[in-house]
Length: 111
Length: 110
Image (cartoon, rainbow over all chains, first blue to last red; front, top):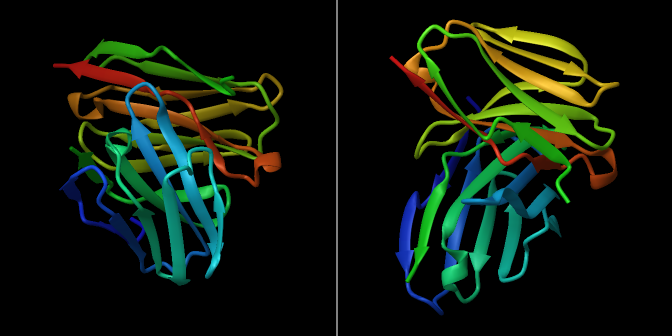
């Protein structure tokens, strides 16, 4: 299994509060991704990174920002959480754009 | 638009049965992935294919590039195979990022 962890694994927060999710890898992979998974929508790409300080938006990036200051960590921030951001968030890593390994997921509930 | 279509959406099988899950796509791809997700669990990458066939234990994945179609087969199915199986494609014009199908929910009864 790829060395990838996510923290926290579960979080409940209130509407309007900022939230940061962390993805940490020990594989030294160049590519890192944040997805959200919702019933009826499958997995959707939020943001991705192709190197330190190199990030780009995915298909559902509104309301989210990311940062990657070192190879091993990719942070996803919800600036002001909304109920529509209640979801399961998955991080993925990969040595190339078309090879990805997924983390265990973070279940976020915004009340 | 849905570039990746999976069938069936739901599948119930008896233990021991041979199972096939299908994935069709409408565009040229650089690779196709099969993923497995157990209830409440993480996502595991089963196969990455760009041509032909791959086998791992009781799982077999095939792809026909000309027909834009892939199948995932499970031989001698077991209740522990119960999971959601997700097909995803890498599109070169999308920076090889993955586009996911909706998933097939498989339940294997003992």
